[in-house]
Amino acid sequence: MGFASFIQQADGVALFILSLLLIMSVGSWYYIIVKGWRYAQTSKQSREFLRTFWAAPNLEAVAQRIRSTGISDPFSHLVHHGFTALEQHRSRKGNSLIEAGSAEEFLTRSLKRAIDQDKSRLEGGLTFLATVASSAPFVGLFGTVWGIYHALLAIGASGQGGLDQVAGPIGEALIMTGLGLAVAIPSAVAYNVFVRLNRNTLVQLNSFAHDVFAFLSTGMVSGTIPGDSPRVMPLKKTTEAS
Image (tube, rainbow, N blue to C red; front, side, top):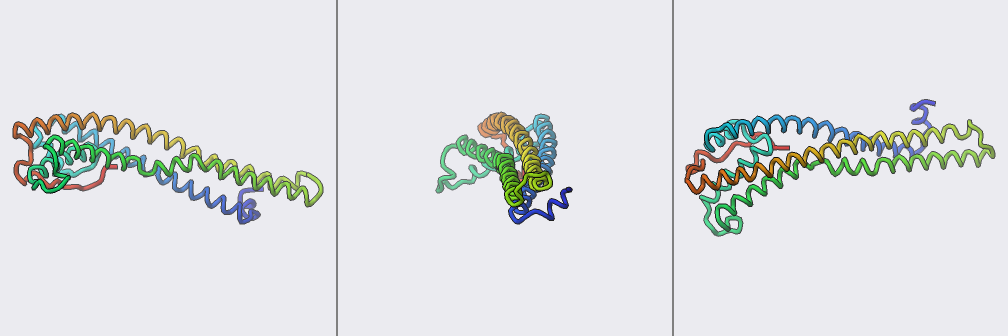
């Protein structure tokens, strides 16, 4: 008996389980491929931005670089938020809560919001992967129980437990078990890999945020921060960090 024969003989419950496992598998591989590709692109863009940032002669050159290339990674997104926060603080009217506090407090809140936004984007799809990794084996197990149930019905109807009576239902049960594991294992591995990559990115981003705060707050005191005139802002945003 092949898989095609199994599909032909499967009842409604078995087909529903197969459809559910198929949806889980397609969704998991979609997130695995898309998030893997986005992470590779973002990592490359982050390294390029950090190399440009540390090699820049001043913050004006960094602002010019962001204006010309746009926001393509979490690190340029963080710097963009810092520049924008200082520009908004200079033009504030002081009649709203978001404008309350000193420039340093305003900058701190803005950098924290940028990190939270990037964290939210990085964690997109992880809930689905975790759900599939934890539930797919049990979905397959339900199919296994259903196949064994059919085997017992065949034995009860025929009065004998010959191989010809139970081969089909037991084969169905084994197929369901295998499919459940085949769906769950890639999701579990991908989830763990992405969680580790996200953790490393956020650690680097938090460390970089301290440097950005130091540079911007120092430049703010000395009056060398880009954005003293409207020519620095707004920055062009071409793509979202992921």
